[in-house]
Image (cartoon, rainbow, N blue to C red; front, top):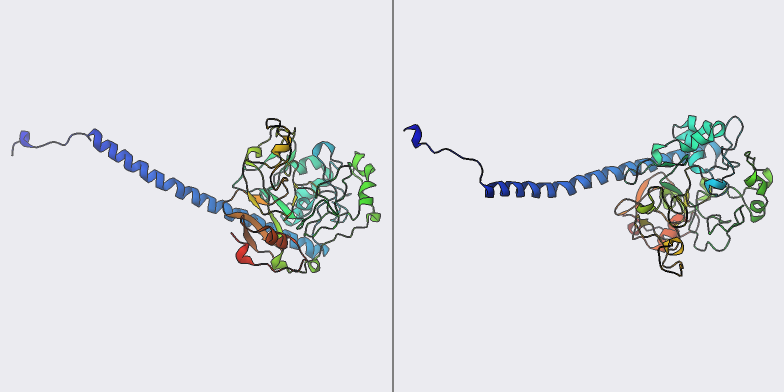
Length: 364
């Protein structure tokens, strides 16, 4: 056969090239969602592992002090915060007299002894130190703003079905809207006992030098293992908190705050929605509609009246699909469904109401 009689293969035709491109596009379209699902599954697993470590730390605290850590003394914004350092002398004060909240109090059980001790000697550095176990990998990454590291998890403050009653008045004179319930039903609760004491600590609030909490405070809200009469397997410990994605980063929320309510302050904050959430509402997946926007966003129609329910940001939630990660008081980790009913969520966050938990209605 002569060379000239051979047929040579030319380049791809345009149609063939388009077919190949289309096939590649289809394969990428199928692959990307699968990769995203794998990443989210890994992030959810990491989040649950974070909570597992937090639960173990809370139990180690109980082993040491025969009580769970407290929620701290007061909720105040950073601009008014009374204790630039943790209370204590050479070592931090215990849960009974510590102004800083539970997430600081358990640092020594999270292999963060240096940061825990630094709370007394260098509070600014301690407050701004990133604690990786407090970061949800599905959210925004470690957030440090104005020398305060923000925590993605919150302790269970209780069912708080009627926050208007039994609500302590905060030391700056304003009602804390359920952030200071005098008779909390949760596990991480305030470490003061009465309105009278709270109203009497103006000196504590305004004094630039950290002041010890006097024994006369009469701390009665100590929560021990025996306090959880519903059983440790039926009571929530700590869970991921709801944060609106549009406020993941600092900026003006319309009310003048850099972040949303419930994420204004960092991990050392005392009693407040920043570090303690309640079960009076079902948990909610992070979304861009904030229920207090109608009150505080000047771009919305007037009169700016809070509408919708809930009209607060005291609920649990998270960036994960399906439910909010949480650790239960027995140390097990769960994914609490966003579709859990309000009564069941209230049962789960109340340590001693005697109601039965149906886990088939709880887990996502």
